[in-house]
Structures are given as structure tokens and as C-alpha cells.
Length: 212
Image (cartoon, rainbow, N blue to C red; front, side, top):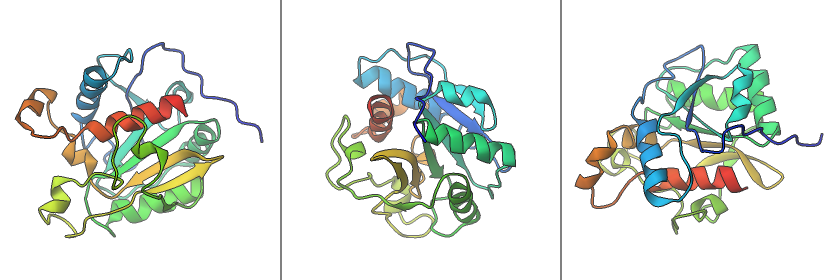
């Protein structure tokens, strides 16, 4: 099947959060404004000042090259959500899924992995040499660790790799156990208190989605 590219109607980048019928899709409400601030701060990309919420089953999904999905609770996609997500990925979209529980075998993780496998394809370990780790900032060791991992909150494990679905050497789904949802869920004004801005990897995701 030939790939019909995602239609990006806006000349500016728009941060899109996926709304799905099960679970708590809105568990990290400050992530969009924080990522938007970082894209504006570090790049010359035109970026909309506010994010959007897009239902996973809506045709509006195809307006956005990158869509963020998170939550704590079990995930069960409806048939319409599953079919729409499959088409979104087939047409070149990138879904970034982050487990807001920072654990390895919790309810969100087990069900989200299963649903992604049903809708798109089984997730596989992504090599830390992948282009997404060098699309703007360079992360030599792969995905940056979060404070929750380093402080032993959750499963007491630093997840050294992300999981992914790739199509034609391009990421369709990127999945994280690292709880970036908690790491990035703060007002961007508080960045001044950080010695290292922990949202820089989010900028890589945006650049990768827009250029690959």
C-alpha cells in the first residue's frame, strides 16, 4: 500500500494530545505548554502558542504529524480509535506514547502495548543509535533518564531503551516507560531553576516528526 502523507494544514507546528475513550488521557495537562515553550526557545520553527486535544477516532488526527498519548489507567481503544490510529501511522504520522506510571508492568503499560500491537504492529526495542536521538540535540546514550528513575520511584529501574514501531525506516510509534509525562508536566517558567532542561528530548521528537 502506498503511503499518503499526513496533511499538515497549518504552517506552524501544533502540539496535539490524543483523547481516547478509556483511561485518563489528560493526566499531564502542562506537558503541551512546556514542549511548545521549548520548541520556540530552541528552534526557529513557527509554533502555535497553545496545544490542541484531538480525539483518537477523529479525522482531525491527520492534521498533526506528531501526537502525544499518555495516562495512568488501563487503555482499551474502541474499534474506531484502533482503525484511525492504524491509518494515521500508515500515512506517516508519529504517535508518542508515554507511561505516566514509570513502571515496567503496570496496567497502562500492559494494555497500551497490547492495543498498539493490535492497531499498528508489535513494539520492538529501539536502538540507542537511532536518528531520533540526534535529530536536533544529541543524546549519545539514547533516551535521557528521568528523575523518577534516578530517584528510585516506581520500578527502581532506569529504562535504557524506548520501544517502537517502524515503517520504511521511519518511526510510526515511539513508546516510553520513562514517565516523561511527569518529568515535563510543569510550567515552563520553572525551567530557570533547572541546571539542564529536561524537555530537550521533546524537541527532538518534534523535529524528527517534521523532517522524516
